[in-house]
Amino acid sequence: MSTSTPAVADLSPDELRAFAERAGAELEGAHPAEILAWAGRTFGTDLVVASSMGDEVLVDLAAKAVPGVEVIFLDTGYHFAETLGTRDYYAEFTDIRLRTVLPLRTVAEQDAEHGPRPHERDPNLCCALRKVEPLERGLAPYTAWVTGMRREDAPTRTDITVVGWDARRSKVKLNPLAAWTQDDLEAYVAEHHVVLNPLRQIGYTSIGCAPCTRATAPGEDPRAGRWSGTSKTECGLHT
Ligand code: SF4
Image (tube, protein in one colour):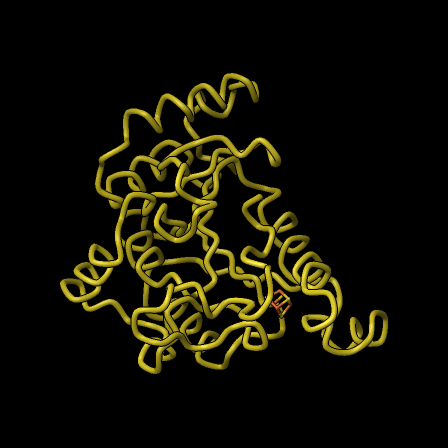
């Protein structure tokens, strides 16, 4: 049963959009923990965090600011073992309720239908089947969702707001880390002893599926290891 405040639960999509945009303006400059706590109070169980377990700071912050918060993890079938281990750590040792969402088909079933290694031949189709569709299904029950996106991640993300409107899904979308820099993240990790995906120690600055992610060299763009050697820069979850 929803525990959203009635004021929010009863809003029309247009009213909810205006509410989100107003909140985004008011919360700009607030600490991510404050934004998350506001979201927890405002949306209750209609709030969900979407995590790839390559955004450990977000999960740490959410677990502390919104104890018991629901977190969905899209298990594409192509994750590094270290990423699955990170998921299992956060599920067991922090105050989140983790839901792993699976694609409609296993990797073997998808290979039989579309041919093997679709990530090499048609990564957009692969992401659509193994990330985008599961995300839509996973988000369906919620009014508001939280991502770990930051403005400095990519040129396509420079205008994201801390609270805004996801018009494609008619949901409130929160990016509480939007304004944080890499230095801000590292300072938080050091101060709060955040448990990181072990791949961080061997140069993985942005972590996605194993076939589509490589470590980066010092000084390289942190996202240069994603779909390296192709023009693809986004999986389609945030368009
Ligand atoms: S990131 Fe690569 S392996 Fe993962 S869903 Fe997209 S194309 Fe497939």
